[in-house]
Length: 403
Ligand SMILES: [Zn+2]
Image (cartoon, rainbow, N blue to C red):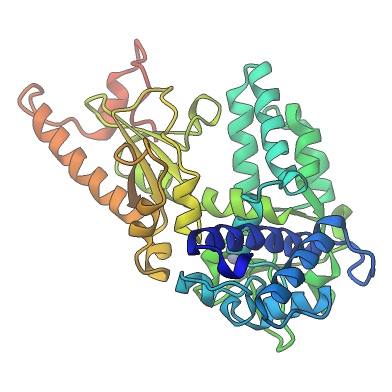
């Protein structure tokens, strides 16, 4: 049947299979006993399905699950995929990174958007759990502290993890936090030490040639810089944030907090993850106008487009923006076009996609216009320090220009 299906049906089938295979590869990478010949159902099912399609389409099939994993690391997808891949970017994709042996970020993106990703959604459940607990306790600061922890401290020692119980904001979420981290495995240890990446604070993977590789895309395009070497057994052992949380929280989170720093430096008032994560940044200009910003650091613009919804409206903003780090646009031609092409009906026209560089540039020019507009009313623009002094009583709404 598939061989004579119209192309769109084959495309949909190909995509479904890609999600299954990606989910299987992610699951394989998380097995505690990699040599175990009994694979989880999701792995076996994906493999069987792939072999069936290969037989039907007359393409060579991988002889075993390990061979599938080897193909995924060693060969571009177009080389062994049983369907025609019209998207050349996907065709060039290696689902597993050959250097580190872990699934590529784009493989994780396909896995997360799989039709039945229950088992892969543990991390989503953890985030929801944190949100629910913080909402019930009316503790937005706890949620913000939780997000910052996952972004800024992807590696903790056992002692540090235990000490979080003394942190006023985080004590509420201690149990959830503990489940976000897992003990470091031998794959991260080389010559008795684990090595921290200076770019993201995650652990680097030691390579056979003596070098290191970071598993986050944002670090992969630059030479590796070592921040620190740690003893894996010291201070109660080392714990690393689970990989999906590193990819979907730490990675974009570093882009979010980087943008926060740049906008605060301009003198803007920035609130992070307002109203229990309605969106990522709320930026308020001196005239009271606000921008709502969501930051996504996604490798695949089609998957991003398809899952994009309008920003939530509370707290309100005058302009809603979706921001993707500039390097993604450099790494993939036509990122913006592919994204817009895949936006769901009804969302197109309501979402502006910008790079982080563009947001900062536009914020600067908006700020300059705002200051010019307000200039005639005030005798002259007050320097920042003076404005802070001016509002000792009463505190104006929003608490601008604190930073
Ligand atoms: Zn890194």
